[in-house]
Image 1 (cartoon, rainbow, N blue to C red):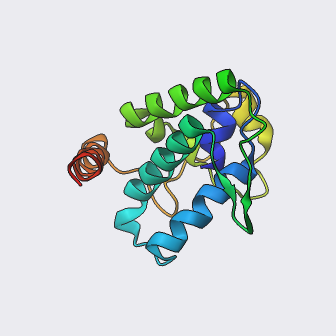
Image 2: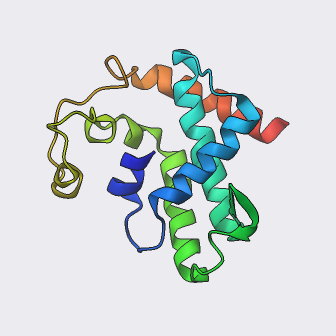
Image 3: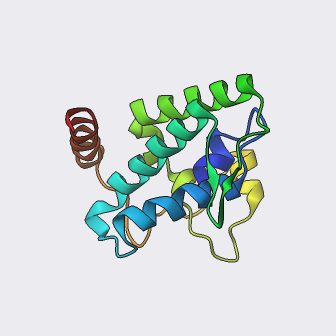
Length: 149
């Protein structure tokens, strides 16, 4: 998620890594922290959907102090533009399969790799990225569950 923010959601400025962590904290409260490998793609999509909703409403309570809104000071135009970008990512999961988004975070990994678009040992967590078909199946399942429940 942090890689997605760096690569695709860094402009307009306003979305910081703490926003991503906050969305994750709330999701972990709902789903638990024991994610199976087979659920990772779906969980990333859920995180993105939660982030889009938070940007739409400009409401993301601080995890440790829920009466404080971390998005309160974000300009409405900035929030709308970032929400649009997140929704575009959700509609184009192929973007998520680009190697630069799932780089290992070892010593060789530097922030510049994201900024310059260089590719550095792309990985899908511990293994190769899933096929586009598998990821597409995950997306279809996610969208179907989201809109039918």
